[in-house]
Length: 152
Image (cartoon, rainbow, N blue to C red):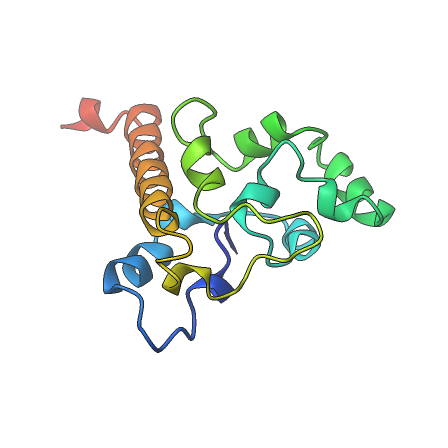
């Protein structure tokens, strides 16, 4: 299992603490995906805007092995990557993208950005929106495809 929004961005943040709701939703299926281990390792702890973005290869452009691993799973572009991650293009992707700050290419995302509400005021809300929307979409998908309504 892979956390779409990596644990490092919410784990071990003590002072000031993050709201409990972030911890609660962070561990839910809305933020988890069944993902091959080698793809999980190739992503590392990238924030969702890089894991799932049209430029997801940006951080890997100097690592041909990582690119080959993704291509081996048929993940040659961001649309396929998001489909495989069950992230809807139209109403969900923008929240994942905005759940972490946009940083200059040469800078890494600060691991404590969620607690820096003055610097990154919308990231917490966008993260919760992304996770809860995906959570609802997953349950709807299961409900429809497993025909739960027909059983009742």
